[in-house]
Image (cartoon, rainbow, N blue to C red; front, side, top):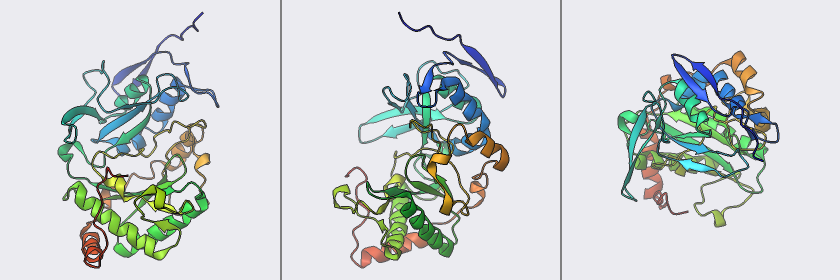
Length: 321
């Protein structure tokens, strides 16, 4: 006999009413966290998750049967969306396709996505007004298979040193997995290729300053004890989990914004849908000022020109990995 479903409930989210069906469905068996728990978590960090997603095309990672079931990578807005849920139109030239992706402008859209079994939110680094011109440079510190988190944090310290010298403000967060992300707001004056070249030039400078970091492109050629400074996350249509996004991990981890003072002692396992609501209530959105700290990447493009003039390979094709 099939298990009975719990009755649907309605959540008041701003001016909207969002229906949550089967709210007692367990999404995270390890902790017993349900669909309603997930919705309540996103309500508790509402301004933060909206700030992270606002006006950006957003891919959804959906888990219709919970995180132990199939993961669905959803680019197109799921069917049945209310008329108030907004979208951004994007193209995929390589496949000659288009899609209308979720474009969050209010918290109710996030909660509706949870109703549609979304656990993770993965936005573009550009906004709907001009999806071809990124306004966010993303530094992804991706540890190798034999690299510990202490090494990731050391590389983050070097990255902060370089950012400070450039006069750029970096906004760190845990990935919700094993690494760290650092975001830098940039003016939407360049295409994806230029932002990737700038990101690679920065990554090479970090690599020059520490043996713990690498920019080696091919995974098979990397030292597994090093941190890959993954500039490729700035490629068109490459997305990573947003600040405050839950991750589909057994312990219900969250991609958690940090202060730089917190980075040396941070442990990604400390930030979950259980612990983050109180943290957010105390600290608020640690990325709230990101739009006011814009950095022009022109100096990094000059570094890229210099590196290539000295024989460095130009930025590789993002789809060759």
